[in-house]
Image 1 (cartoon, rainbow over the protein chains, first blue to last red):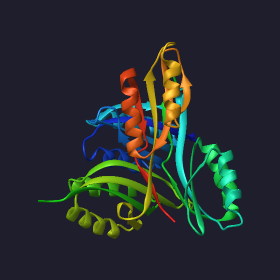
Image 2: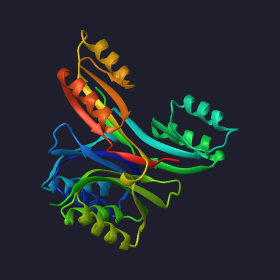
Image 3: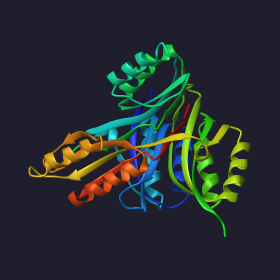
Length: 161
Length: 161
């Protein structure tokens, strides 16, 4: 049986237009699902970092990593799953609310160190940052009120030390 | 003269493998630079949201939007630049530090509501969430200490109300 596991990869690339499309294409052509992905500049404006969460077979991932390394714009690939690393995800949650339950929702958000960023007549928007477990727990807590929208960045990660 | 402006687009797509690569490819083939991009599931596990920050000519963006709308897996495109929206970016900063300046750095981070997530002998890692202006100001503040690494998710956004 093939072993399916989730990996968080940090891929530094030269900021050449088209690299992102190539990297994403390489995963999908191999039947590898991209769970989340985010990309932004590093300290060097010429170099970007792609953080990608993928789930799939170990052997296929090895093949993909080899192919990624062959791409001219790929500088380095680190599998942060194997390292001591800190994982975080940022998310916005827009929740149904009314006069009666608004302060209850704000209070619950505070427990999760969430920040209320917008209040309207019938909705409230909260931002939360945390690991996946914390964020999913907060989503479950808010579900009974009626979630209007979730916007998540996907996991990002940095090596310890 | 062509008008170059930055846009934050929220693109909801069916979670079909390959959509991300196609969307990214559409921008780059038209010479449009993707500044940042992030993608994750929405409330519905079958639907993902791609938030993309792009800079370029207005007319070309209109053409790209039309082409994106033609992609079978694209459900909706919202230009959040034109709306009342909240923009945020999450980032990790790993900074050089020693016994002498460690508490100074932690204190400065607190002013920016940054959270110290790792302390090693010669480095410290801080997480910060904010709009671009705040995050860039914090980067500038930390620069003199020596920044080892920056990991950013890229901008994410949600409509108000």
